[in-house]
Amino acid sequence: MQASLKFVAGLVGAGAILALASGVVLHREAQQRDRVAAEQMTGGNVERGQLALTRYGCTACHDISGVPAARGSVGPALTGIAEHSLLAGKLPNTPDNLVRWIREPQAISPGTGMPDTGVTERDARDIAAYLYTLRRGSPDK
Image 1 (cartoon, rainbow, N blue to C red):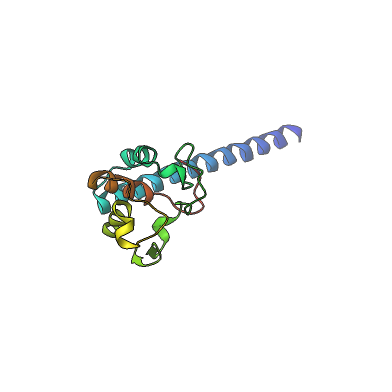
Image 2 (cartoon, rainbow, N blue to C red):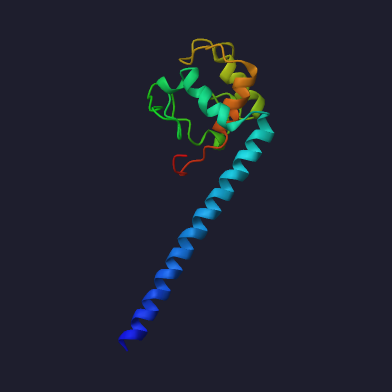
């Protein structure tokens, strides 16, 4: 009887490990799909966008998942921006509008707290690509 309980416990443990491993694989596959879709939509590069967020000082004002030291609280948290219907409370959330908002927020909403920081077109596309991979409820990358 004791041996059969150990065998069953071993099977349950092995099943739990397999389930966990499967979950990790599925999560990684979903991240890769999000990345490819974001890069296709924006014409940007996710890795370069993640780095550009720090280079342009976005981290000083925004909490940004996956970006070290991006815990600002002046502007909104950017995790989940891909799921918003509007940008800046007025623009439909499209890749071109996000790129435009990143590059020239003062032209879109004069007096907004978000400053024009001189982001280039390419860098804005990269930043948009990264932001479109951030989903609510997903762990930091």
